[in-house]
Length: 346
Image (cartoon, rainbow, N blue to C red; front, side, top):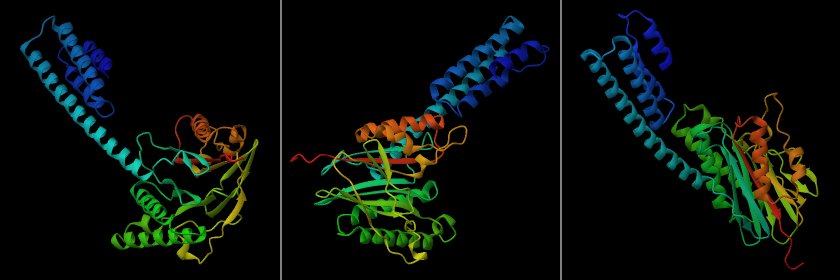
């Protein structure tokens, strides 16, 4: 813009003046850049305006001096505005990061006989919070995990995520049975949805919200994992170069839809032996498309990484997934990796 305006002014008749338009350059820059880059553009624009005046008249008239001073004042206010906005955005990001850390606490690296790791990839570059959730809790003899994907985006999805995680952290230590835990999660989510709908009946997101989720129990003393699947992609068991989906047959309805149809949350138990690795994920990881429209082949990719430790496995998946989509996801993706460690006694 600066080059175009400068050229247009120099090539126009002497009575046509375009140099006042140069102040638009820092004004537009302020809409997408920070204060330092905006200030640099403002300086270049002022230099171009000074060059035009000197080139046209070989001197600077009082009117041109007034124009330069006016442009300098406007540019200064633009830079100051950008500086204030930048500080406000920094504060907002800090608050959002704190909220996300409270909402999505990274799973502990060790729970009982298990080594764990978690990862979260946001679809939006500036996003800090989304609708994908995960959590882990350890009772006296079992580790409980949940991973879920809230329908929709934005504040309604965040509200559902907060409700679900709060209920899980509260209920996970109270129930002996996994079906009872899932049933109470369903009741808690349905109650919160009813409360939200009553307070804002005109909001369609409230009436149509639900959460796909997988809830798991991993006993300390038994080489098994028990899964209740509520409409979620099945966990993957990685063992000796093989990838085994923990298929639970017809899954239950997603959480939040249980009031539509009476159902039992049937637990399915699978072997989970020392050295095995369990991968939990949301559909953002398997529905990510490349430029040709091909889905990310998660099961095929992780088959070569079954010997990796949980944190290293998730690092590989995240890098490979972002490379597959060209650096930007279309939906958030959350992952948990769990390895059962060998018994020290053996």
